Length: 60
Image (cartoon, rainbow, N blue to C red):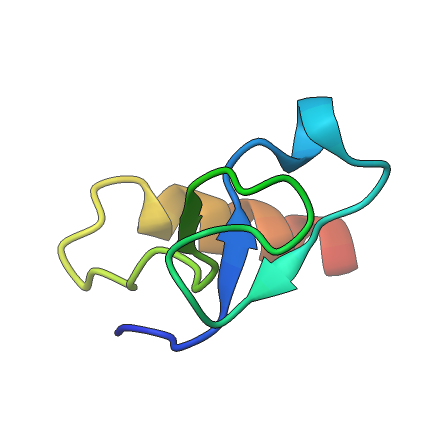
């Protein structure tokens, strides 16, 4: 999954909050930007079963 919205790669050190952009450069500090989409879901996730089981136990 690829998103058109990008976030400044240096926002934690250069800005008080995330700075979003559509281009390759940050409009505030002219630093590089990176994809802001989360990592894709993998059905072969080896620890997914354990996370789901822990979530079920926590909700009971």
